[in-house]
Length: 252
Image 1 (cartoon, rainbow, N blue to C red):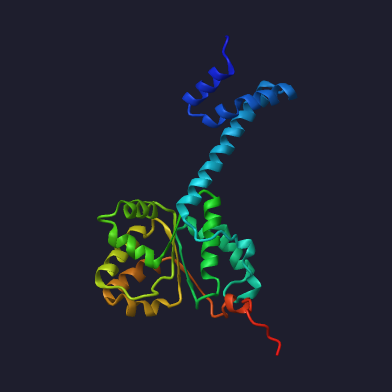
Image 2: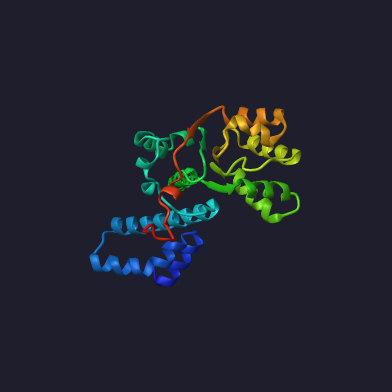
C-alpha cells in the first residue's frame, strides 16, 4: 500500500467526509506526535467530522430562523416582570411543549419582553436541533399574498411550513381583509399539530375577531391555535421605558 495523504483525502471526499479530508494532515501530525493507537486515531477523525457537521448544521438552522436579534434567555430579567416565575421559565426552556406541539401566546403591551422571550425560546430550540422560522405579521401577510408569483416568497413559506417552531411577531397589529384572513387560516390549518407556534400580540384573542372581520374564520383559527396552548399575559410596564436613557439632564 503506497498511498499519499492527498490520495487519502480524495477518498474521504468521495465518501462525503469532506471535513475529515481537510483536517487529515493536521490529525496525522497530532497522531504521530502523541503516539496515538489506531483506536484513538479513528476516534479523533470521527469526532472531528461529527463536530464540524454539527457546527454547519447549527449555522444553517440559524440562517433559516431569521431572528431579528440574538439574545439568549440568560439575559431575560425574570425579576423585572410578573408574567412568569423562574420555575415556569425553566419549564419553557426544557421545550417539552415543543415536543408535544403546544403553542404559546405571549400577550401584553409593547416593550414588556414578548419578542425577547419568543426569540430566546427560538434560540434554545435551534441549539437543540429544531428548525425555527421567525416572521413578523406584516411580513407574513406579504409572503402569503405574493406566494403565487414570487419565488422568494415560495422559498420562505416552504421553510416556514417545514419548521418545527414558527414564531409570528406582532400578531393582529392591523386589520385583515377577507383574502388575507383566508390565507392566514390556511397557514394555521397546515401547521396545526405539525408544528408549534409562538404568537406575540398586544391584543387578546377575544379582540382578534374585530381585526379579522369574519367571525367564522376567527373561530376556526382560534379553534386550532387554542387546542393546545399556554397563554402568558404580561401587564407590566415597558422595559424600554423603565430602562430608558435620558437625553436631557434631570437636574434643574
